Length: 257
Image 1 (tube, helix red, strand yellow):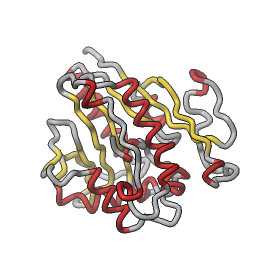
Image 2 (cartoon, helix red, strand yellow):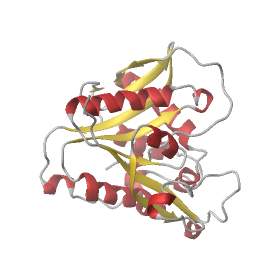
Image 3 (tube, one colour):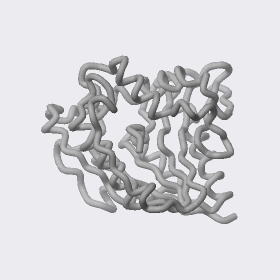
Image 4 (cartoon, helix red, strand yellow):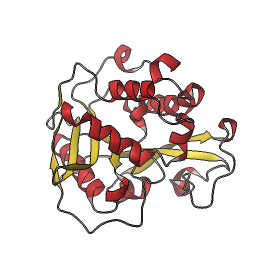
C-alpha cells in the first residue's frame, strides 16, 4: 500500500445471506464513507490491524487513511484507469477493489522512494513502529518486484463481513484478470492468509513472503482459530516461523486467448 492499504485480503466467514444479485460499477468520491466502512469492517478482525490500531481507529487515523486512500485532488477513480471498481447489491456497497494502473515506465527517482512513517502521517494512536515493520516491509517488496514497470496492482480487495463468500471477491478478481489480460500486464498483489487461497485459484503464483514477528508488538501466541499464514506458500518458500504473520507477494502473468 506507497499506501498503508498495501494489505490485500478477503476476510473469511462461514455464514451469511443467500447469494445476492451483485453488479460492478466504478466509484465516485461520494462513495468514500462506505468504502472506509467496508474496509475496516473486513480488516479489523485481523491481528495485524489490531496491532496497527491498538486502541481502535482514532478520528485522526481515519482521516490520514482516507487521504491516502483517495487523495483530495482525485475527484473520481475511473474504471478505465483500473484504479477502483466496486461491487454493489442494490444500493449497498458490499465490496470493493482498488487498483493501481501503471501505464508507462516510471523513472527510478519516482518509484524507488521510501518515506518513513511518522505519527503525524498515520494518525493518533497508530503504532508507528509496527506500521514501518509491516507496511514499510510490503512497500519495500513492491519496489523490489514491480519497480516502475507497466503493470496492474491490486492494492485492496475488501468484502464486508455480512456479504462474504457470496462471489463479490471473485467477481472483482475476474474483472482485474480480464483488464490485465486485455492490456498484456503483469498483475501484482500482496495476499493476506485469508485471501491467499482465492488468489491461487485465480492464477496468481507466490513470489516472496513478508513474514513479520508479532511477539515484539505484544501479540503473544496465535489463537487456534486464527490464520497467520502458515499455509501461504509453504510448499514454495518454506514454513512460517512460530509467532510470525505472513503476507505473500503474488504475481499473475497475462494470459492470451
